[in-house]
Structure formats: structure tokens, C-alpha cells
Image (tube, rainbow, N blue to C red; front, side, top):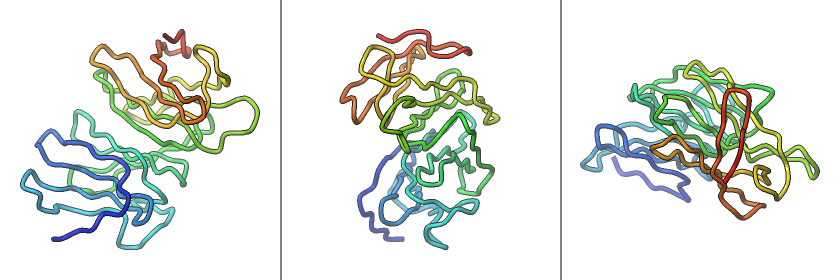
Length: 190
């Protein structure tokens, strides 16, 4: 299977050394390649862009959890979708406290972290993102806008350190912040 990528957004290695790629800006699809580079599946491209289960409008960030499930930040559909390692749709989640996901990661604690960078108003509140339980429940979200420590301007992506710190990169703020959080919200930044 030969696949052409146009402006791929994100890639992640699976536990099995295979590679997953978000090819979202033009194709609106997710691809998985074996360790040898063979195409194993594509998801979302059969029907083109869409809002149904397994369809995407700019799949932007991807992450694989400890169970091997693929989490996709379906940016323009304002949701997170979850798939099996074989590409079969499992579920989707939306929450009014969380807007448009750009980046998504799974932490060492098994929680899913997502950067919320879209549909930001010109004035506060801007959001940095949310932390989800494995079942999709929002545990933490933030609406702290600004350019001071612990405030955000259009979060775009994030990383989780082995210690569990959350590093959030901002587009408008042009910086990365390291967050400390609890189930009641962001408790600090450094």
C-alpha cells in the first residue's frame, strides 16, 4: 500500500514499534504503518471529511494509551475520538468545558490530556486544555487567559513528562509552560 501524505500533523509510535500519522489538513485521516513501513490501516478517508463516528475534520493530535487504544484530537469537530489498535471506532467524547482539541497525550497515570486551542474569544477566558479520565470524564479544565504565569493564549500542543508534569505550548503566547494540577484545577505553573 503506497500512501501519499500531504502536510501531516502528528506522529506517534505504538507499543509494537509501528507508527501512526495524523494526515489531517488535506486528507482528514489517520494512518498506521508497521515497523517495516507497510500500511496497516487508514481511518477517516473512506467517506472524506465528516462529523460521524470515525470521520474527521482536521485530526490534529494523536496519542496511544497503555491499552493500545488510539486517541485522536478531531479539531474541527470539537471532540476526541478513540479507536482500537486496528483502527475500529470505539467512542467519542465532548464536553461544554472543553472546546477544540489540538494536541492530545496520555500520561503515565493513564489520564488523557488535551490542549484546547480553538474557538478562542478575543477576550478572556482562553483555555489551555483539559484532563480526562479513561472514561472520557473531564477532571480538570482551565479558563485562565493572559500572559502571566499560569495563564494561556491559544494552547496548541502539550507534552507529559515521566514525572507527570504537563508542558503546554501556546501559539499566541509564544511560550511553553509547565503546569502543576489537581482535580480542582491548575494549582500552579513554572
